[in-house]
Length: 334
Image (cartoon, rainbow, N blue to C red; front, top):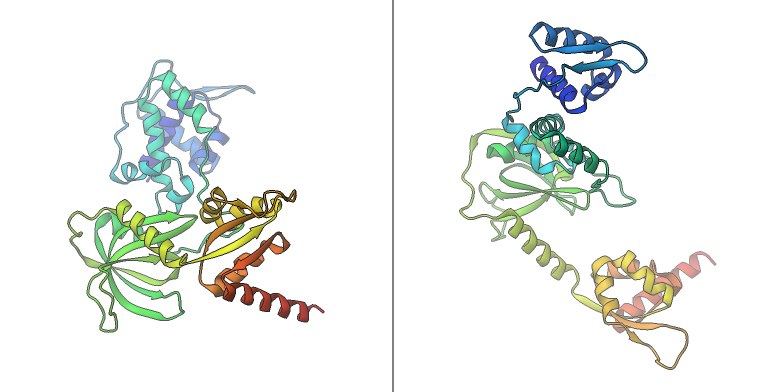
């Protein structure tokens, strides 16, 4: 552990030039006293570290000195695909490895390219979490990620969407997906349970619903030709088709047109692309859209979020359900 820290200290000085002890301590997440000891250790090992006194002082390497100790470890290499998303890297247990890998990459670059990389780093930021929603608690994510990387069987307890608890299920973890700030595990059941009548060999599990996770000693063979990205794209398409199986005819005010994409996402945007004027001669700007919606019980709540800026014209049963809900609300708040 200390050897890794000493290397990180050396690379920080090489990449950034003069740094004070408090700055180094903040980067390495150690005390200033530990930095002093590590500087002494570097000097004793032959690294030419100079200490400059005064208000503009700090530690720096002798001019022209560069280390070639930039070989990446396995986990550091694994972390590179998360270089733009430090939050998810931390969730997966790769935060420290990502930081070390980035230092080594910067150290291997020529000075001009390293300066450009540092400038760009401060100009782009990826935030994968959705607005107005706390991130799911995922205490087992790092263990699951290790099982995915090492191709090890997982034995899990899981709470299904309907509240049913499943325990002792063995899974072959094939990949992890981060979607809208939510982590999902794509896995195949090691053996289908007796009460499982599904013929789907691979399923998607929400990581926050895992109650306990143990890594089994044995490994497993991945399905030949399995493509995580292709599976996820097809799975997302099937889910969208299953959820949005009804079309509502909706009359929208000008403000309702602005609200629709915010409330219904891509479905709202697609509906607006084919919007028709309610009455081309009318000056009020209301339009008619055909909007893909979920089951009626969900669609009622979703459409009510548009308030008085929308009117559902059809289908008749959805319009009646909305009218009944509004009447019940009016009675409650009378």
